[in-house]
Amino acid sequence: MAYRNGTYVAFHADGNNLPGGKSDIDHYRLMQAWNSHPDDEFTMVNSYEKATAVRDDNLKATLRLSLLARLRSSRNMLLIVGKTTSSDTDWVQFEVEHAVDAFKIPIVAAYTMRDTAIMDPYAVAEWWPPALRFRIDNGTAKVIHIPFKKGPIMDALANFSHKAPPKGGGLGIYTAEAYKHWGIPL
Image (cartoon, rainbow, N blue to C red):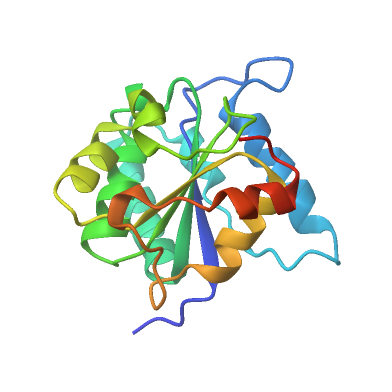
């Protein structure tokens, strides 16, 4: 069995990069900046090259094998959920399916369009990709739902893993006190 020490980051690249910090790629790059600071205990597995997937079936097969190897060695998954994530029909679906079904990896769902606490996961359900929705509904996904803010992301990645998933099944949330500690409004 692989040693699981990283965080697998998944996002919907949509083949573009919208200007002004509005795309999931921009949020991923912000996380890379957090990762580069020596004072942060943040380790992520680079899954960015999935955005450059080509139409060649041989290259797609190679990419799938690479993503599976990365998922296998990850302790958790950070799913950056933006406004277009629910429309992804390719890589995010593949990643969520395998993270939950094959590798039992908990998911930290970080919503880019939320600046406030998430106290009811169904309030952000419209942005769930179909693979996540299915696994939340059938009870197989272990998910904590948070806004895309550094405090909750760092806490969730440090505390939730394949050995210690979030409580609440697919509908895990932080308490109001935790959000108050991070300075995030309810």
